[in-house]
Image (cartoon, rainbow, N blue to C red; front, side, top):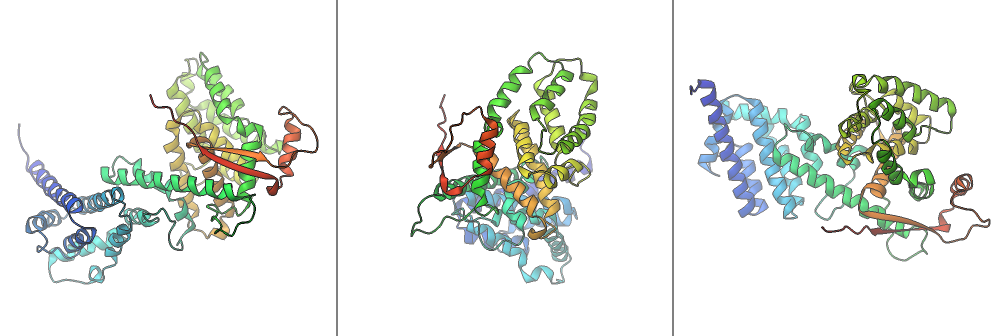
Length: 442
């Protein structure tokens, strides 16, 4: 086996990086957060050998290679080694202190040393990068699950979606992907708890206790949304409908599956003209998708691929902008129609969820350049989607009870009467109860 100079050089960099990673793992596990922060600052900001001469030489070797990409990767991975361990130990408040280190004034000073100058220039580039913006997401909530100080951007409230960019990216360091998943799960759990607490108190008698804050932007209309989604028969049966659909497509050809899928999604929105437009725009591309497989039996892989295709068509295009169908569904119908479509697609296969979250993240990133006042409809849509996912895809069961009986007798089959009752919804007449679903242990 022949060893080229490039390979030997590359191995040297990898070994230097590994020494730095092992050092911070040792520090974060056996020293206080304050000591870990001092070590991080002295090494990455000041290149100070006082902390540990061997580790300083290892970082010096990475800098001397003048490979900014490898330096950024090393820096990011060390940050997430600290974040992961602090999260496990419930020391999340230290994350903000870590991010504050990048505000150190010396980063913008010009030192005499060429190596230190290179380090500072790279740090300045890092601070301006998307990687640093991603890092700041981890300081949005503290150890108690509080949503923190006043948000700089409305998109921060939906960071659980933005984190999808990190935990689905195989090029990200393992520690970064782990940290992103942990924070995303924590934020989803916090929203689930906040929603359950908020809805439980709505409709109850006034109390002297502190009012539970609304976790959405929908004000008290959140109760109307939750009630609509729980009461309206076409929405309530989403899971049953998805199960029945998956059972009925067994043995169908891929082309027959596409016809069945359009019927399952049911684009019958209030405005018939809008429904026709959506069907027409979606059908052409849908039937061109994998057309060479039309005569073959539909498979799970084809179901997932097709669902992802439709999901992209009704949300965010590969051209990095919202699709025409997204605009139609969002601005020309009730946003809940779009939410239900996404929910129906997700219920076909849970593996679609990361793809859905990436599309929603793209929508948030695109619109967050505008103020919240200009994005009210988009924000309301994401809040509705959060509620839908909490109700249908989480381990919390929501039940609605009407405290005042109807004046007229109706049956469950009378959809028209049910819709009329929903449209006349009076919040004080209803109570919403939440409970954890029992999980069977095998």
